[in-house]
Image: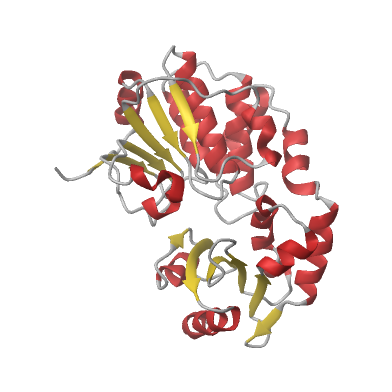
Length: 319
């Protein structure tokens, strides 16, 4: 049977009302949006008396402890599987790869979604998966508690870069305002997510910025995070996600690349691309990746200089 694409919140709501014993999958190298969406949905399902857990291949970084709270996994026989903020099963990670082909419902906001689940609700115009979950719960007339709203606000704020990225929509601002009215401590969340840095991260940033490489009269910028740098500065890998924005802060850079060498596969680099006026998803799509119009990613094999050469060859077509 062909996988079904859902078109309305009513269709998703019906599924959520009927399902139970739910496992919610979040992507590897978890960020605020997948954690917030997963935990927010889990808390809501539990509030209905249903059994639900949130799982991740890499665990959840300490910086998101305030979202996890007193959450504890429940014991139950799994009957339904939902993925959130996952566009492709390759993003499940090693620990969850067995779920490929077994996902009942996918809720996502990536235009590059592969529609791998039995049923999928994908809104590529949504600023974040957390925005979809929030609007869905409002549509259902749900009791959105403060912990649920805190999770969903955090995911919305992080995926929009504190509401400054191109994917920020009026709907995102309206949802954020409603969550603020619910009592979400937006000041604490935004300071924790965007302002506070560990000393090791600051020193690491200094090193990486000083070593940045530029091409095509400064229009293309590269920041390369090697395993050696991570080891030298003892930086928590969960902090590396924030580095993706740095190259584009340099005046004149239109294509900002951050290359992160993979700890367990040193000949593989995770590439994050941020652009000012080009289709980032199309560029990363040429390497089998995808994402959003101005923020996308992919993985490329090779040594750093080889990966940069491959990227330059493609990027020059978009200048």
